[in-house]
Length: 274
Ligand SMILES: Nc1ncnc2c1ncn2[C@@H]1O[C@H](COP(=O)(O)OP(=O)(O)OP(=O)(O)O)[C@@H](O)[C@H]1O
Ligand SMILES: [Mg+2]
Image 1 (spheres, rainbow, N blue to C red):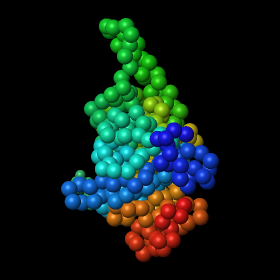
Image 2: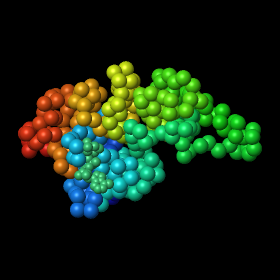
Image 3: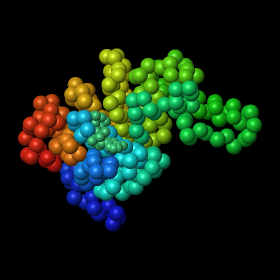
Image 4: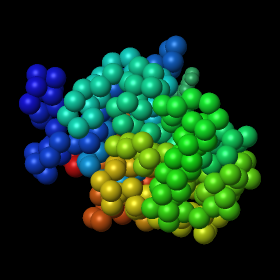
């Protein structure tokens, strides 16, 4: 263990499971002017765990996610991935640390096709130049894109379809495909099923389970307790910019979680207890 990791030695998850947490957020603070959006938040996610992040409007969920995505770097606190402290000062450093964030609408470029979206910002360069080189690079990208989508059991009309014409669920699948293609360690899904119908919601659940099976950790933001108890292993509740409890979906109930969200539950006994 390096001195960098020393600060995380006390992490209860490590003691419990004998393994480093995939993500360990400790005491993260973030203010916008005089609004304190995050007032010292902790979040611990294990490898291959689906952690739901819930809380009322304005609780700080999106701010925490943007901190992890490098969009709004934290003012203070520490973040470690697999026991190594990281500085998530911009979106590139977050991607390098293995954090892929999937926003409901922002993740994809509507005017580009499926392959281009999977490779956005990371297009393969062919060693040979000219038309043949570009053709070969495109062929390789299409082949790998198809392999990842097949792997996720996602069917699309064609890899050449512009993503603007895809359904909400198919768009989510492409964004998740990016995470798999680029070897992300943590996938953050911000309200992935908010605008989806029953079948598409089932497809997103399936994708989340596939990520979990591959040992990729998932952070799922949702206001929907059915979603949360369907796919999450644990639930972290934020309330007014602070942690309000960590719950286990196998032993706790939706009512326990709702009590923590609204502040009417037994927060004091829950906080930090899991
Ligand atoms: N860019 C910003 N500038 C100023 N204040 C902000 C900014 N982003 C968030 N806030 C404030 O920070 C607090 C937390 O907001 P945040 O968006 O993180 O909440 P949330 O939990 O995602 O809520 P919701 O469920 O409504 O999406 C709110 O008081 C919000 O007004
Ligand atoms: Mg939000």
